[in-house]
Image (cartoon, rainbow, N blue to C red; front, side, top):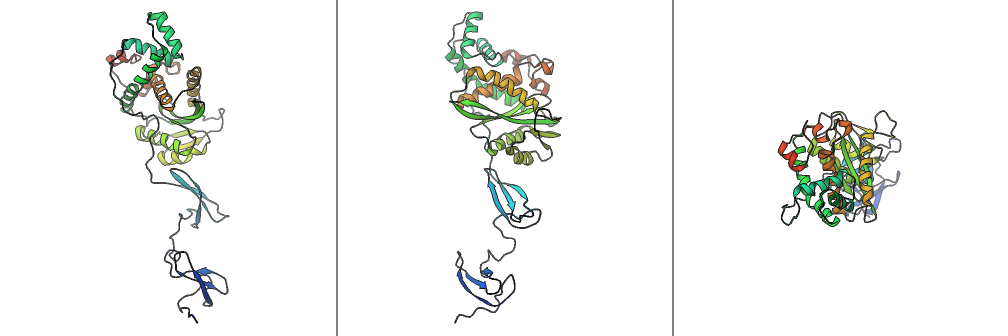
Length: 349
């Protein structure tokens, strides 16, 4: 007859009327109380150490929780007590991938170019500011300058100069301070790449109309939102008052994680007192430029084209709502007269 040690008691009713009940999955002896039918393994240090649970305790009632949803950069837990039913998010200690706007550095030279830089920049201005296609730009160059250029050549110019414009934008925007701005707006829209839907995530400053960053992603999920918002926080800090987005769930965790001192306002429609109309207006301008292209052929090409379009939007194209200035000028970007003449930027006010 097997003797049960006298120090083993039921943790629920403290009864000593027990019998052996096999072993648990770690190999420790289990017992079952004959009165309350509780099963336990007193020698297992994991199951008998208080506070050592698989998931964090509920911050409201302190009880156990279960994993409700597991995302790339955070986990969503929910309290096991149905009367509490509290839901909370815990971020993961993972390095967040940079957005697609971080183009890979490439070497640039004028070797092999048959036309002057002035002609190239005129073609790019017509393409990005005039909402023209490459064939229409080639036609304009022939009609105005009597220069015969293939539309394929113009497409190669766009791809070739995209990293250059990205470098210019990064160098100038790194010297400005947007932490005094009241609101930053976040939104997403879709584009077609090889017939498939991709999502363009955007961030814009409400006061200067400056596009802070973008992220082109095949998914509309929280990981894409984390990449965009983390890069905005790393490059520009955080706004003074609030970050504004729609009611899509993907913005909740990154907004509270990267902008803890700003209020996260989730708007419903255009008629609200605080709305997302600023970035919706940019989406309308972007779609007016994008639709004549009838989509993009590849992800890399679409990413370079969007990055260059945002450069022309921030630095080259004057805005009537900004009294004829560019968002970069209103944000305080400083560049010399020689730079303005070289890159065809608008005059400094």
